[in-house]
Image (tube, rainbow, N blue to C red; front, side, top):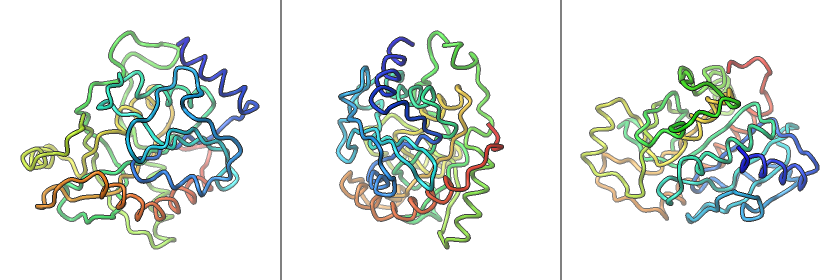
Length: 273
């Protein structure tokens, strides 16, 4: 708690008590969304007390403060992953910080491998639920000031936000897929047998992030909205390639940016938590 408070205090000082309404986590190849933010402040992770630093190509390592559609936001341009050697407490540290800074919603994005055979590279998948194959970030003593010992994960990806996103996508002619995201440790891309297993247990896409952050947001009562960009189709014969994942993420990033921007503009105070 002390480490989190130190980070929050330093950020408030550096940003003149900027109070964001929306927190945004940008996945691999999706950092270009910051071009859609009217930036007021930008802080490197290395300049924030106790904040980890990004070590993965395509994750710049900055906390961006500004406005989107007239609403104050804070965006992580680069996230942290368990496979980098960080603990789950470190991976989810920024979510705790953003919640204490005042966010009322968390938007998450990621690049993922398609499991559902109807998906194509470049599709946007609205996350409806997840299957967690990572260590749970709430293991250990519960921080009761943040949330309950056993948080309910029903509707952890807000159905109200999903419904509004669907309405916006129809207006904007943005094709959407919907499905369950499987969170794994990485850093290896999945084997064909693993893809078949993920399909058998109900997964539609798989990746190495997002789930821990959403669990912690849920623990703190912050509704989440998640989008996966399908950057490869795992049940095909194609081989996983991180550079191609970044390229595909950037190509789909503009559609994701339009969806995020319109949804942020139309946020309401009565969405379920």
